[in-house]
Amino acid sequence: MSYDLLFQQALRLHESGHFDEAEQIYRQILETAPDNPDVLNLLGLIAQAKGIHNQAVELFYKAVRQAPRHAPFYFNLALSLNAWGKYQEALDNYEKALKLSPELKEAFNNIGNIYKKLGSRQKAADNYRKAAALDDNYAEPRANLAMLDRDQTALEELTRRFPDDALSFYFLAIINYENGETDKAGKYAEQADRLSPCNDSIKLLSGLIFLKQNQTTKAKICFEKALIYNPLSTEAHINLANIETNLGDFETAEQHYLRALDIDPSALDAHINYADMLYRQKRLHEALEEYRKAVILNPGVPEISNNLALILKDLGEYEEALGLLFNALLKRPQQEEFSINTAETLTALFRQKPDDARKIAAKWIAFAPENPFARRVNAAFNGGTDLENNQIYAEKLFDHFADNYELVLKNIDYGVVRSLRDLTGNVEGTLVDLGCGTGLAGEAYQAPGARLIGVDISEKMLQKASEKEIYEKLIKSDIAEYLKTKPRADLFLAADVFAYLGNIEPVIKAVAPQKIAFSTENSAAPEYTLTSSGRFAHNPAYIENLLHTHGYADITKTTTTLRLENGRPVDGTLWLAQ
Image (cartoon, rainbow, N blue to C red):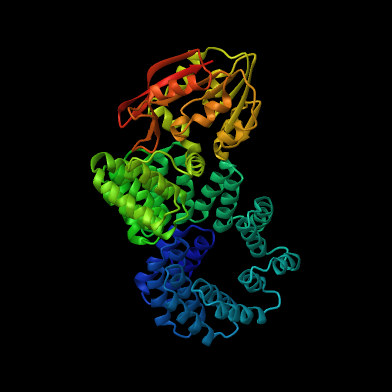
């Protein structure tokens, strides 16, 4: 077959998307004409379409050496250099293309995109304007310029002027998505997708919008389509992996995370989310390795330090974990999750090295004297009894644990609610669940004739309780404040609540002489003490005397195991007073 016929056949295959077959013929042609610039350029375009930009760059460089006066070769070279992250080289080659073809408007537009990426806003704007000046009907640089200013009015005007151009709709979708206007974002993204149905960036954005709207199935379809149009999209792989992780399909999730890291080993989100998935599977050493890679990539992200510390804590490396947690707190002291994890890790260290834990806790409170968790830990380690900020501590603690509260209780073999239910029997009438949490007691006491009222200081706990739809009323309040209203009930219940109060006399006094059932952790202290775990324990004799003092004559008590702590049973007492 002649050269011309081979070349035309390859071109037809190339234009129809049969890249592999076209490439095979192009390379066959190069065997007899190794320096043919057109064939070298076309091979470069195939490599570019496949996302193999290092190979594309090599081919384009060969083409420009053979045809140094041909502007499109420099333009194609610049495109792949930009995609490969070689921004200065890309700029140089766009400039070479413009010297040969000053009317190449796309070059000015792409130069503007590079300067925007590099943070040179003015240079980006100047190049967008140059591109727009070359063609009154060129929508893309006008949309880029409007997006540079986040000018929604200008973008909306462009959608009317250029109704068939997807970019303005896409940018409006981005702005509304970032502003939390997901419904509006979705409408703009849908229009952009209609105009440019094979655009992976639009598919990605649509997927993110669907995720915000809790439409996981639709989001997954969008990310899968994004990969069809761009198999090298790390973001699509990461989002699909995140979805599969949440669905519990860890095997598929791992495949996507590893593919994302194969495409881009520096993909920080892939390392972090993959590590989180490994941690959820208890593959601690593998998770540790991924988090360490993430720290190397970006040591300034406090969440990475926090997550790495959690693994080290689980592995018993408490002091190294604390170093990372304090690093996270230093960067973001207002993040309550970091404080809670620091307190838990210090508590674990205290069991092994109490003196070391006290010294570290003292440094923490010196650094953050108003931090309720630092105050609590220091009081617990040094024999404190009561704190002014109990309410603040409890509210922040339980807001944080609301999502995983019931799972945590299951893991520590928590049975207080069931035992209290056995002690009191059914309740006919009103039951006030003091410190109701996520509604475990409400579930246990739910029965015909029972009217349940829940009181808790944590808004997030109350939200979880509300989802169960078993309480007639849920009230956000500190228990002592609520009891000042002198409510009436057939039973007041406080399941595992007094461990966070210490001095319970105001509660007993406010409820008396009405019927009350509650649990306490046992202590040999004269009255009560704050234990190293951060919870209060009470002397049963003190509790019994307190009940008698406030008029209770019929008192039933039973010793029980409240929960497991580090695998060991915690002794407590269940009380029924009437």
